[in-house]
Every structure is written in structure tokens, then in C-alpha cells.
Amino acid sequence: GKTFEMWIIPKGGAPKPAGLFQSDQRGTALHLERGPVDASTNAVALSVEPEAGSAAPPSPPIVRAPLSGLS
Image (cartoon, rainbow, N blue to C red; front, side):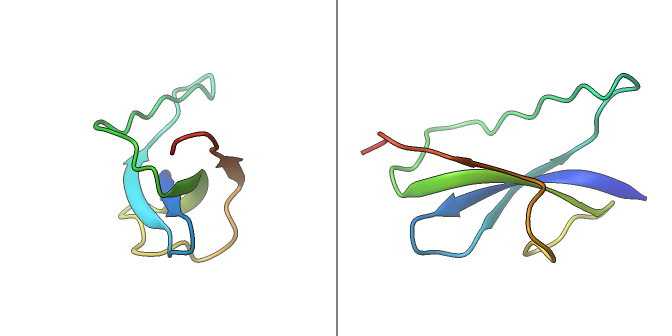
């Protein structure tokens, strides 16, 4: 009943949902967010959510990757 959800975290803003995905039987997963990367993006994050996802992360992400050099 759980899924992974990717989040785009803008500088000084609330996380924005960027898609739901599952891993395969080996635990491998790949999720692509299509389109240009907004220069105001500070980080991308990953959380474990209910199957339908969430409008906002209910708890701290399990992975958070800062981005730099976009502007």
C-alpha cells in the first residue's frame, strides 16, 4: 500500500510533487521528470507515501539531493 514520490524543492518554497513510482523486485527504480529544470530548484527529494501519493510530504524525505549551478 506504499509508493515512492519524488519532490521538487524550490529555493524558499514548499515541495512540489513530481511523480509516483515503484521499485522492481530487485529494489531498482528509475523516475524521470520531463522538461526543463527550473533555476529556482534547490533540491529533489524522495519520500514513501500512500499509494495515491500526497499533496505535501507528511514526513522528512528518505533522500534529499541538493542541486547547484542551475542559474
